[in-house]
Image 1 (cartoon, rainbow, N blue to C red):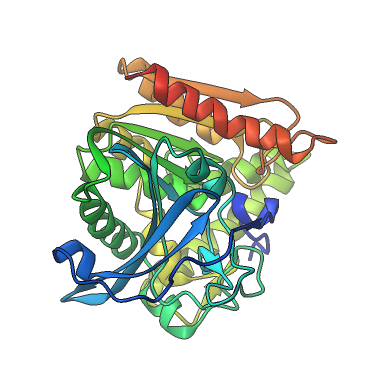
Image 2: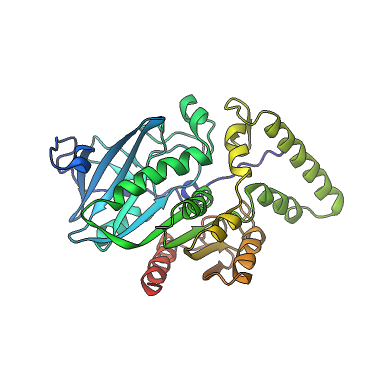
Length: 343
């Protein structure tokens, strides 16, 4: 079996952004129906981050955080990469921090209502595993599928759309690594997604990523054939027990893989009406750029509005060798500039 882990962009970067002191987290509210679901808030700079918890009948409560600009502003949703890390750690302390790169930086600008959703059953503190699910709670691995995650994101997305400080119209969904697959599925499911940005994005399917990687990492046909045979055997085992949360491959349960392997980001984006921005490292070994190129070429040939930024000498984290984090931050600001320009 292939023993390579798929590591998310978020985990590879491993950046924590510190936040400001609390401003009444856990306080009670008794305003409108939306406010009744608000469970706390805190400040980052001059901007308030509000925490909501939404009940649903056929699943766990969905918790999300959203920055509160001074006037109604476009909505930006970050979707994190793989694993079960919470989107904030240390919430009950003065040293709380975001695990989602660039979320706080954008929120502090005050020009957007910036939201991020906790994966249900994520632990309070970041587990070991570098984007894998081997250290995640059993409840998380039993629940987490693409379908469940998209449903939970839609619940939070719909709730945020109704908040008084969120402007109607343009919305940006930004997905990182695994989150890029999810962002594509959300764009297909909800026509209110007007712009979608994909970083380290899979192409036709995540399984296809493994196929391309097998070819790229082989020095001859015999080596490629051996890797492809191993890959086919792992795929066979996964789909023989597609609902198993106890059997693992590449750091994640079979249940997770069977769900994501069925999804085509290409097809989902073709179903959406969103403008599309893609950024990929040309030396990415987790999601080979040739896989992403396949998706981009099909989208372009159907006349879709696609901006594709290929980053030379960069891996899955979009950082070329020797580059510093400000250069990665610049990649995010390119996305925001594109969002602003393509109104």
